[in-house]
Length: 314
Length: 314
Image 1 (cartoon, each protein chain N blue to C red):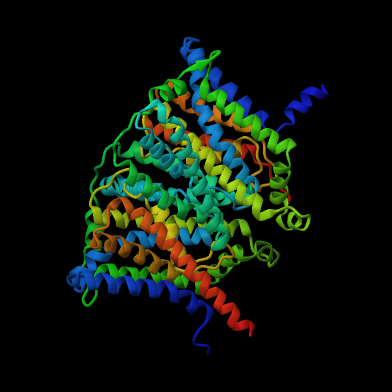
Image 2: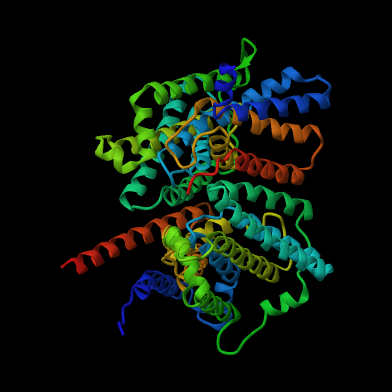
């Protein structure tokens, strides 16, 4: 039993960055070192973590979803309106959305389209639907979602417990279940999977449907935290989710992803935003700082990969 | 007969047919009242898409995974900086142009530097770079709207021989791009890299140099568009580049350039740019609300891309 498997090394960089950031935040603002403090720090990380897992499922099959932000916003609008007033219709709409995601996955494969173009087009579709549903900010979060999101478990705050839960479920789904192996195989070598008798079409549609499912959860959680919705509520999730997957050690091609890493990546990004405000850095540079963090992490990973390659070469 | 077949065999013909159809449908509604006005508006706004689209076209032609996502941020930063240094004085226009070109140059170098040094896919490299550029734009803009110099404002809104000046400019750039692509060594190099990078390298194509030049060219064209657009609209706005992310990619794909790289097409960029503008104005003429307009734009773009795609042999 090797202690340092490739999977664990992959998790090393994201875990270290999270730890460093956490120490920095504690040092700058010691009051965050409490149950309430931690909850406040990581509260908004739950929907981001879910969206990141959704993006990871798409990146696993070598695609990229540029409609993630508008889709989560749309789900938030549906949750704050239909799910609240007519749960049956609301859930039917959300189920249909997951169906649309599966269809897009199938379409991209069947016509060999570039995923970024199709999902950019879809971002207009979701954005338009969200504006039609809620032209002005409003709606009310259903009470039961609100209750779930504000529950206070013993020992650790909800945000931490939920993040660990999401990481474990996603880890089991992607790394341990047989479905996950096929899906990662599609990202690794599509033709091999096809020759082994699996339907690539079905696998890709499944990956997209699963991504849609996690994105729906992200939108619902977000509304549970914000209590109302708006058509632009989650636009930055597109970039955050992609950055989260990469920070968490996911690769862009080859089906090499890390669900636990993705959740850690999402937590890191949330924490980075808090750190910047504690450092009194102008909000103008918030997005830029996220870009810089992304570049630094990629550079560190490149250095690690190089030293690893040198180590095995000797 | 062979002439007809030859014309209909061109990949760009569909974009122009779609443009014509949209134009007729819009004119039918207005009863021919604003034919000239609509054509002029289409040429003006189409021109901006053409210039950014040409840059994106060369990048996409470099092969799968090559796309520049930093175009909107580049446009905004170039427009903002240029207007700032010109201080609304006609005598400082040369300085504005120099700053515009420098902005494009620096961003292009940064983009390719990230791709090459960090060995990351262009999508992620240009995305991370765009975060930083966007922050720089927010920081320099500060919500203050600086007017363009009078001379530039006049030039960019006026027409010569009944055709808008910006359209003339786009035409000149297009002809240059066509010559470079179809008659020059640069176009051969770009297409060769897109068809097979390894083969191109073995054949002695300076792969790194050509890719570097292409990313710089794309950033330069985006900067010029940002400059023109901010002069045309009487000042730089932070969100002015936002819609050009989808537009630049969509005009390339709809225009008949191969998404997988290797085959570029200049006339198609014009057809697709005019088409995209006319779709939006058609929806406006028919009184569609903002939500419906977004929704239909997304659906039409995806529809056209699906229709235009040829199912490749697997």
